[in-house]
Image (cartoon, rainbow, N blue to C red; front, side, top):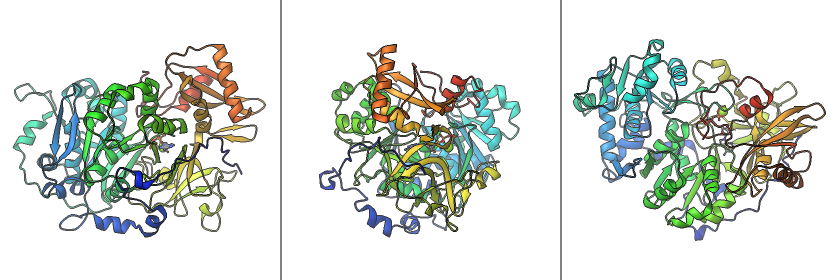
Length: 601
Ligand code: ATP
Ligand code: MG
């Protein structure tokens, strides 16, 4: 059995709850885990007036007639810095109209509405309006070119696409003949008197003439609500099916993992084209009745610090890549801004190196709270909570209501069972596959068109996540790597995350991606690709120095044997390091699906 090596462990960051700016929603972790049930969380929501549950009703309508009606629900920061907002009441009206438009077009229950839009108001209106109509929403990341769009629309049998004129002309016209299910293309822009491109409808005109009072359609917890494609980090993206009951998990995780309070100004930097941007950029904050910031532009260190300052963001949910880019831009930039409103920072999407957690403490005055989940889990499963001590490098502990465990596989790849239960077989600190006991509300209900693949994810009442991790004696989970990324060298199992985190402790290194390459003696040896911080130049001397640095900390068996400097690591468009591509390129193998590869910065 392989044990977690422990070299990534940094000093624990202790929390003094009394010194926090607001009392966290979760103060006593153990007690909350004991008392919490998904049923009680479900009861804390409103439910549809006639029975059933609908994400959009919980997120918008129930607030729109109460004290929050005139409060900003979504506040948009445009590329030029101008700001405007939609209140809860305005959002309710617009989403009603959008649902009416769908009804007028005879688009009904369960039918798929896709969007290809930047982070603009129409995207949010289309998403929530679609849910009100009991149709299924699938947001596509707006930077996709025609091919990834075609693949996803075909797989999802889209009946409606909401997009812009420019995207339509650039990305859809050339593939429209290949999309037989796509009946309606609704363009969000263009003037009324401008001729409409053939085969499209002008959404603003339809919205104006749509009847306002469209009663929200009845949906039940198990009705399909959202279709989200995975990031494609390990291969071809999969379409994960999510249901309306997921809102119960969004509500609970918004409360406990993001610690949302009524007066928060909350900013989730993820694009709604990915599951984080929908679950936590739209649903969770609106369910909690807070004001959510939307930045319509792309990453820029100064712009982001300015948004945090000017919008007085209190809770910020972002990603390791963005945090590492902020680190790379230099901590002196932070001093130019007043970030005193900020009280809680969380991160998801990739392993969060302890170096980054510590940078948060030093530079922003608070640690970054890592949390772990997947497109498939629909919501946060493991988290560092506001009141709970942080062990830098750990993903934290399971959400109340979530039971996580480590499962081992035998030499045939089958889970090792202990009676009926594969999760009972492991001791603390043993590396194995992260598994979750089924039954949390936002669990995916299928991979679209891939039933067999879906079934294979489950064993004996557990969902096997495909990620390798270990759980320490106190119940903190430590990410080791994705199943496919783990390196087997001279009998050791080496997680790339541990090596990357150690490399990032070297002052010259901004980011690192680590892979295994074949070796006749060791089976595989570790190879690292590194991006340097500004002010450092690649040289043989620096290479030797870094390898020596890593050897001292990790030992010769685990430290990189080879190291290459790169200007930009290959990433998915959602910002994850594509180790499979580093490997394919290094070994001259086919690159596989590259539909979600980011164009180098
Ligand atoms: P694909 O499944 O198509 O290969 P993907 O797994 O990257 O893509 P997502 O569902 O967006 O698609 O990402 C979930 C994965 O991201 C997790 O399984 C895990 O590998 C990684 N991840 C997310 N959060 C964390 C975290 N806090 N620490 C480590 N890894 C994380
Ligand atoms: Mg995945």
